[in-house]
Figure 1 (tube, rainbow, N blue to C red):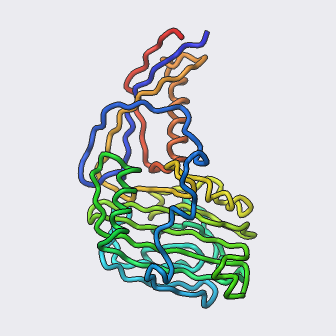
Figure 2: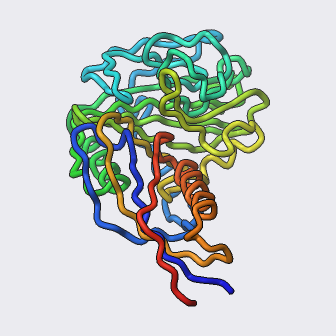
Figure 3: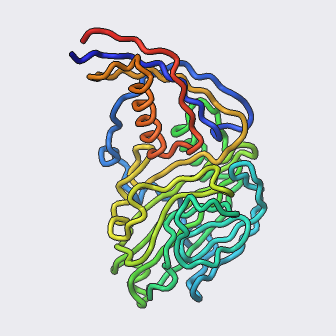
Length: 319
């Protein structure tokens, strides 16, 4: 006999806020999430303004494993460590402590000594393509308004107001012809990272546009010192499938991934889940398997790897 069973689960989410412990009223969690393809936003539209038209500083590819150091106008805190500068690598990587000498990804969790964001880490600067990245920092204007709206949409109940935004965009084309580069008339790889802060809370977005097949090692996600917090975007470690990144999301917006970058006190979220099972979920071994599956699913959608789940009660009802 199948029995409909209700679970009241408290999810302890570390790294969601730094300033306080918040208790959120129990809400219903659907067992399935609508696929990103059903959202109406297309990948190019989700990009923040970039390139010279937006007033960006532009750097065209100059050599293998090259990078640029960028001084930040406002310090940015990344999982508890505050930085006044960062390194933008032509091979699709942002590092905070020091430049990364490796051309391709060190698959995370690296358990290393570096904090990094890898929107699409591969040997892009050695593929024979024409490429560049551009960046800009904002402390006022419509970009801050947009960032504020995005964060409050993806992380509700935080009453967040952005005071600083850093946008960096990589743009590569499989051609050495400038017209092909300008008009994207050849295979292209375009992606973007948006760092967002209000001085105490930090977030970042990764946006994907066109992503041609990459015939080399590749990875997308982020990692922290000793891999206390880390995440790999599903499907990003296969160069043949990265073209689908523009259709993936953890916030139901195709091509966009949103993450909190905060450490400190935990937030506790009460979640009520209704599911149907052939197993008796009042037995500890059965419920532990269910909680593990829920945790893995939440993690795959971009929640912090430090998430902890505790069961409060199980109620059984007849279907």
